[in-house]
Image (tube, rainbow, N blue to C red):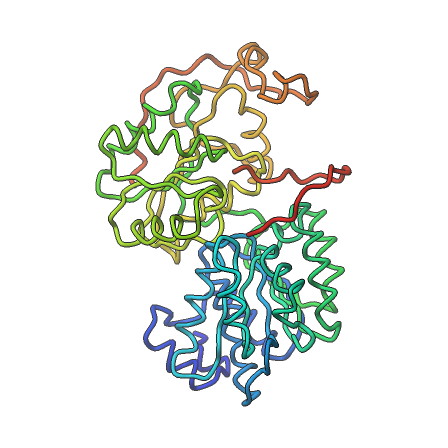
Length: 434
């Protein structure tokens, strides 16, 4: 069996790893670490919860430890770009564990926090900068940071970083980074159109793939419950009461919907909190800390929490609203069954969401098991168009499976809106601010 020592990592990193739960490399780590240590560009595809952060973090830190002198004022040696503040926080925390006892400096810059404080943290430069794109552009425009000596670029959740929501910001940032650099991309999903964009940033890359793109973790039990939209809240209450004492993550499509459901669950006696883009960074951090500490049983969130939340105690994920982007389903349910544990995911499907469900089943290459109700008939789907259709915006209606309106009770299983990807030209909009 391969060990971290056999991979040739620095003794300082090995010493830090002794105090963590990482005993032996996961498949993605065993394959990616040697290639990265050799200085090769790499595209890594692996299921969520399989240790991608360590897969790029450990060999990157190994190379930085060899330099032996400070980076210089406002300089950055390695840049890690991520789509959300939560993921940035997770990576920084992991890197701080890996580098304990070394001189490696880690700085995080994200939106929602003090720009001046982040600028001050960069005055003496940093070995590793973990950033969301919008905030990094703010600092570049102010002259508070320089990427001229940055030799490493990492895109975590690369599919999201390269889609239409972030690609323009990424291109602006890339202009500041030398062409002679090592570029690493990691993700659990990689649609074909995004894969083609990724190829333009990589130079003769090694491709490491330990599972088919879009395949969820094997130990996640999945199912779908067909239910009218207005009955979802009471159905969720019923499910939550079947596993009292076990933590659950509930995904809503909108910020307003998250707040509304959060208040409703709280009024029913649940210890619940919410995370979405309209909450301040302090509010988001505090809620996540309470959830991690077990002070909350339920976390209601938008897709801002679909990537970057690593809480091993989460045993249940509920898709209260079906995700608009099918790949986000894989990331959502990947918040459970972390590091080989078991978990359950249940999706609530209203008539207007049949198209989203069918898109998810297409990338999964199999139907979700039905655990409640029955697939909606074509007549019911036609009578319940998606919101954009009600507003007069054209869009194809999904071909529904035959079936009746569901009324079945749930069975225990044991245990803001993301941008749509499209090749069409889209209206301009403000840069994402992390």
